[in-house]
Length: 444
Image 1: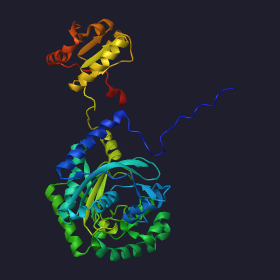
Image 2 (image 1 turned 135 degrees about the vertical axis):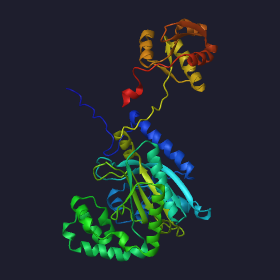
Image 3 (image 1 turned 180 degrees about the vertical axis):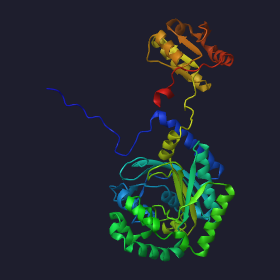
Image 4 (image 1 turned 90 degrees about the vertical axis):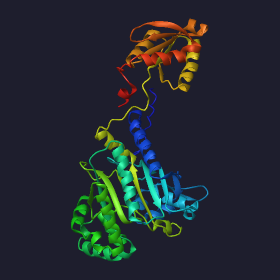
């Protein structure tokens, strides 16, 4: 009787591996983000992946899709009700309050990044575990801060090689504007409730502004004639938004006014924005987004403090980098030296030598699993190595190596203690070869 075949494990639905051929895009993006954040005066923080579920309920809004349907929650043995963070801003604000940053000179600028989790239907550009970088400026209400956050995020996306990006921007006002605007929205939709999706029928009662954020086809079509928020701004919100647009014009940044942009989180006030590739298609096209959240610090127990922030979705950016065929160098520098060995004693010597080359910042490649010198040299040739260092049983006993120039085939015996200096000298004289095969070719 045949034994039942063991089922192969797979990653959880909507959660993906980041494989070697894709890592180079992540590294380029993260390196650029960290450097730019530091240049703009942001300090790096880290917050827990698990937070109190109540933090997100109070911060994001209890009637949002994220809190109602998408949070991963758990109850600990001690009775704590926790959630895997569905976004980064609430955790940053909690850290600001808890650690007394309100008593420091303002504004405080935070940069952080990591995984976030939302239990929703996976689709192109939308995952259940995804990653974001986040920029938060807490303690400043001036419109120039709004533009600086947008400028920073746009600069990062351009720096990594993305082209044809557009900023969508709007102002949704604040508490002084919301009642009148919400009344107008409800009046517009009242005769159309039966045409709304199930979620929007609930939004109509609890938070009518969220009707403008629905991506369902018929709901999206209905909003095209809905009242827009800009017409209902009071003077302070109007002047704030006007100044933002003037700053963007001065910077020459490409933007369009999207009077129905509201974003899906309840903590936003005044400015909201998204950055999208111009030629992207489909509903999930924003690769960065954000806005002002002047009431969030107060709502989470701190002293009322204005704030502005934005985030970039790493997976979406990486997908766009690949779609636009952005050139990214391999993470691993080309190794011009190949270390070949024969026999257990030679392997021991080779491992020690491998470490010495690393300390001297000389990239080395190897194929320790192969026993045939001939097979190893074929690998060295395919990788485009300029020099091969061969250690056999005799060389291991004599503390020597055979140094072979791959192009000419010339080789000589070198004492082990002199090999680092000799390799450095030879590499300066030899023109680097082009590899026939690289790890990069194999991974992409």
